[in-house]
Each structure stands twice: as structure tokens, then as C-alpha cells.
Amino acid sequence: MQLREIMTEGVITAPAEADVLSVARQMRDRGVGSVVVTDGEGSPQAMVTDRDLAVRVVADERPAAEPIGEHASRPLINGEPEMDLEEAAALMVRHRIRRLPVIDGRSLVGIVTLDDIAVRTGNLEVAQRMTAEVIEGALPEFFFHDRG
Image (cartoon, rainbow, N blue to C red):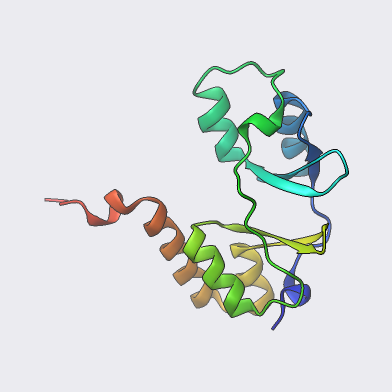
């Protein structure tokens, strides 16, 4: 199965110079947990998640008027429409990400999330294993400390 078969095409984007508050409101209003940040030509450059906003903006008491580009995650790890699901899944686990933008040339054409993999493939077991691996990679101290 290729990413083009399971990706969501309507990806929410924002230019790097958009302010943090407008991007947060866009996420809220659209019911999404991430926005792809674009350059002046509209090409995808980075991603900002709701967690990025909480950790890099709110927790650090940064001004809501700051450009979102300053708080986005880089580099942008992405897939291609022809990429096999297994290859994409390995890429997501290796980079400990839950969302994978799909780029064709310089154009953003979709996004695949762990939820997409579970719902669209019907394989909940694969998605659960991937989620565990992504979380375990991101939070090793939670999985490997002495729980006494």
C-alpha cells in the first residue's frame, strides 16, 4: 500500500511569518494537532504541533505575536506519494514522529498520521505497535527506569 492511498489531502498550512496566536486558533478551529509551515513560495519547510505550542511557546511565556516559524520543528521529515506504507512507518518510528507530510516535488500533497494508518489500513495492531515505538523512542526514561 502506498501513501497516496491512505494520506489525508487537505493539509493545514501557515506561512513562517504567521503569528503564533493565529496558528493556534487555526488549529483549534480546524480541529487539527499540527500545521505545516511554508516558506514565501508556499513550499513546506517545517511543522508545528500543539505540543510545540505548549512546550516552546506557552511554557516559555513567549509572546503570541511571535512568528510561528521560530517555534516549528525542523528538519521537516516527509514521505512521497509512491512510498510504501512499511517504509513510511519505519521512517516515522526512526524519527519518533506521529505525523508525516507527503510531498511531491516541492508541493505538499497530503499527510499521514498514526491514526490514518490504523483507520485506513484496518490494522490496529500495526498502529499500536508504531505508537508504542514512537513514544518509547521519545520518552526512554519512562520505559527504562526502575519502577520499584
